[in-house]
Length: 106
Image (cartoon, rainbow, N blue to C red):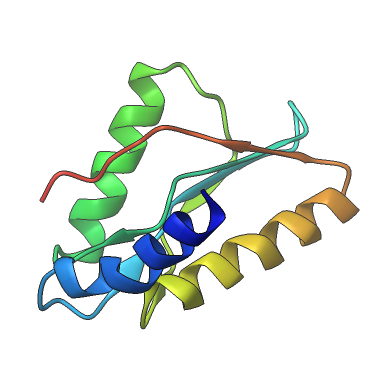
């Protein structure tokens, strides 16, 4: 299984399209002590469109947050490293990381 997963991660960018930009979105809540994150995704959409879609989805899910954003990276690995770093930082602040099943729709 691990070999298949590693192979999938290595070939996925080839199927992601020509955008060359990857993102993930987050929402932080000091009140609930949670750091919500999406999975990495390829994005050719405008940053405003991505964030509007993320915020609208959070509202429909009734996720409460004080901060939000959708950082970008050059590839999936860079974004995954950014997520891991952000999760460690938030853990240091006493916030648990919650992965949300959100998909950006271009």
